[in-house]
Length: 173
Image (cartoon, rainbow, N blue to C red; front, side):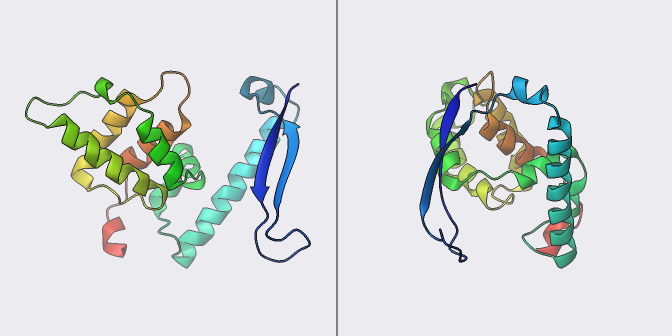
């Protein structure tokens, strides 16, 4: 089993290491090995329900724009719980082969790609970065330019753009 370094800064909420950066070697994550590890299912189930409880609380407290549709499927719940930063999405946008995206003849592809690059990073903080009528098309384009093997940022953006919303979501805003 190989080791990989993790680096993070301790949150400034007190404690002996508050505000300090920490680096340590940990076992590298291997999905295939993880799935076959004893207690892996229990670990994931516990983390899943902890995320669900957090979202249910936010829903009842009317916090963080959490809405009923975030709890309607495992895919929605995971996408709502998983966070990618604006910088990670911007980097993803810069690394895409946008020539794989297909546009109608009457659409200026360069302009459309520019708008996607402008608005996709906003999905890190709000799923309302796109008007309803453009969300599905944006999701299709994200799928077209996604890496063929594993692309967690593309998966995150696709779910955020394509998830069903409850009918009164925008009224609550």
